[in-house]
Length: 252
Image (cartoon, rainbow, N blue to C red):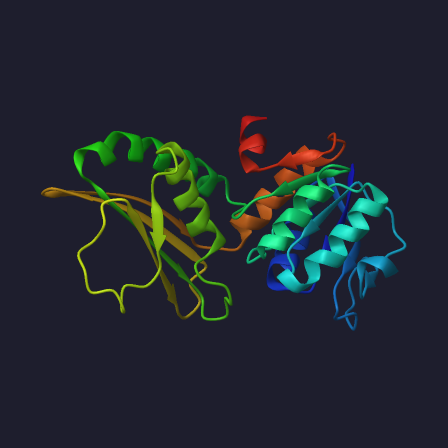
């Protein structure tokens, strides 16, 4: 049995993780952390990490960027592994994640979906096959109207996967409204759409002479991210300090 502390337990993703964990015999939610403690859950809820008196094997975090620093302090102090699912982290926070990983296991991923993490590998292979034949690369991501960060962490991860495969020879363009010139062959355009209740759509478009190849992922429910986070928690519990990602989970 893996005992999980759920950071951001009152949010939509936190509730989804808890609901799926109820039917998983290998997982038990032993505590929640959320600024909203006026809730009735089958486990205690604390308003901050430092107030948490329960011990666990791993933390699953679905919170907000502003809450991550205190969580990392807590996990580093307790040598507690953490599955870090929150996106929109600043450069200084990413460095803080790397520092924490020196003393405890940290799994950070822009997207917890197993399908998206397979897509990360596919887009890199496609770029290596198509870019030399003058295919331009564009990424379009769509999310619900409550998402605050743009572009999505997943869109950036897709761009990074492509760029790394191509020797980091590309640069990213987020807005062409003020640029009146033809497209650079070494750019990756990243466009964001926000509307309705879209859970998460990502299209990677390879547009070449007279043909277009598109690799896509559609999330129809937040459950895909919750299932991935629980799989990551099972993987991470008991692991040595270090920085892990969902590729490690898929690879076993």
